[in-house]
Image: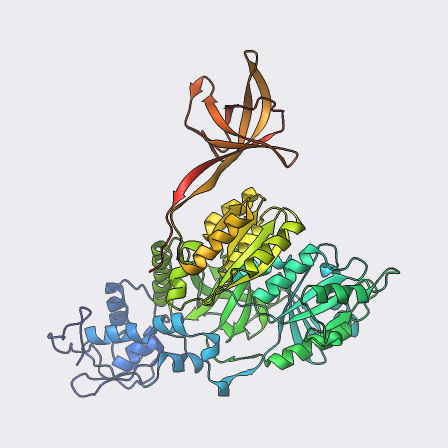
Length: 632
């Protein structure tokens, strides 16, 4: 029996259809339904307003009227989902038969999923029988100036020179090449920062990571960062030793340095392929592409082209003439013009698709990069694209996402305080750490100390270690890997601090090794007590020095980051720490103030240090008590 929108039985009785027999809008006869004589109607997963009107034998205006009552403004060609159609059926006095197919089955059979299915259906849920091979998606990473861009240019030029039909397609943010009839998609990312930024947003984009190492320079810090990021993403690595044409090229040195950092190439009995190339002379390119295809073949990469598309935004921008424009990498399914899509926190209908040549195309299958028009707002790189049934489902999904985001402002990232609770619940078996220190010697000492405090319940996994300040890249890797950032005798870059706040990444700074190890050991055993921690509030640059009396100095400053408040202060000169003191006086013009925000000028007087100079950086900090979880 049909039910009304409130969920109660519809007691009004069937409403008499305005048209039982006759002709549709095109003049052809239609089979009409009479609620008094016909049984439960079968409604497909999605149906247009016009088709639904023909199924019921009513005027399309009646359907549109009922949709408007539910807050859905549709035209005669609007596609609506089964739930919405069932609601209209109930209002018109029809009974709807139960669906014979699950939402997952609908999705894999090419119908756009309902709201629940759109939230739950993932790549791996497709039945094996409908999967077909797809092209590998490759990210090229490595140290700056080691030739990432030159290598990509050489790959493109080789394909163009080969004259292979459809050989090379240049996209905004992605390149497609064809080797012996096999397509390979290269992501033109600036490096591991963009790679990790997309992964931090939940995007599973890359199938293979090509690490570029210069034969004359060897393994450098950014090389190790790229390797660590690829490992954290559990992506197979292919090493491309570039600049083999140089006189001082030394591939054996590169192989040895890689093995010293745990990357064992196939020649040394490991599982990492290594190929020598010269981007300048375009040698070794064919061998590199063959190696990539072999690694892809081992992975058995597959996708279902018949399901609604799922993809990832590679780049996006606001075009004055065309509106929001996004470069999308389709990972599974087929994206078609007219599809309703949800991307991050926005949605829309695909108005047009363009290939790398700027040509309009009607659809894009798995492992295809296309430029998409039709979104209401500009999405972010790394946002997931999903095709859904209609705009109603799209709006519902956006509302759910925004509500979920508002309910969980911390973003679900790992913190040292909640680690023990996760261990007790069996939700985690390791504490992931990004470790930064002032010098290499400190890293070795800390790593050795961490090895001594491993727990039976959970192990410490150092995803990446390095020297220098904590950077945005460190924060993004921690965000993508649910790791915490531990710094020893080092600073957090201003931009990295803002990123950490935005991504809710836990950053811990120490200047004594035993305090660092004590904290981590306490976390492993769930015995963390409330502790006073340092919070960096802001920084100001000294622009002018004013002398008051015989000894006191007031620094005329401009606040460059955060806010300046009375409290602890550190003075940096030329990037090096000069002294630690306390802000005793803080003024705006003649008035004493409690704080000064970014962009404003102020006068700062320190309690005991009067040798300030123009150009010095004053960093202010406060001490705050942070509550910790005690063992249950």
